[in-house]
Length: 248
Image (tube, rainbow, N blue to C red; front, side, top):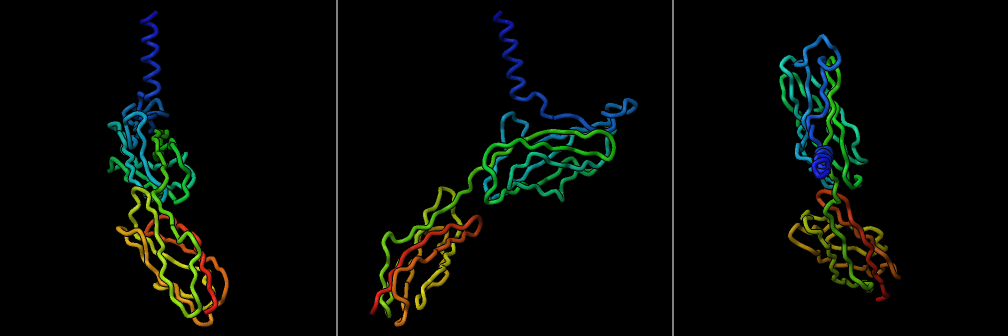
């Protein structure tokens, strides 16, 4: 009974880890019994280590290599197609081919800023000029991009007509986010300006010091100014900060 259990456990583990990492074979040797079994090919995928994934972040790219194992008599070009790509992830189909004189294709996976997060299995189909297709799969993991948030003064900044007031706008960086961030301002009331108009928070910095200037005839009242932080790469972050323009 113990021997039977041990044998079953080994078989289950073998199935879970995927014994055949070469996938299925393709080529004339798979569809025509008159063709030699050496006239076949199989595809190799980014990781031959079971349960390992190729990782990329939203807004990022990563390289993948699809290789080919050719039988002695197989010398055709093989076109590559991919199925199961998650929403927002693309692969450069222009280079998705392994010509007869090559042993691999170097491709780039690109994840948009809003690409779906999670673990996915991608099917690679190798299509030769003649004969059957070869199929293999590999796993990718899409992670949340490293990002930042914009922080503004907690309370409304009051500036009188004809007055200039100093304010600071800061950003909170996630662990690996080190991009420069350019600040833009929208919805400024009439007669109010911010200097500099487009300050840059450099990758080693966390805040920008600004001057809010109200002209003598600036509009009076409470206003919400939209601050947008635009990084060198990745998605923008935005926040409103409040100012009050008082009569001089």
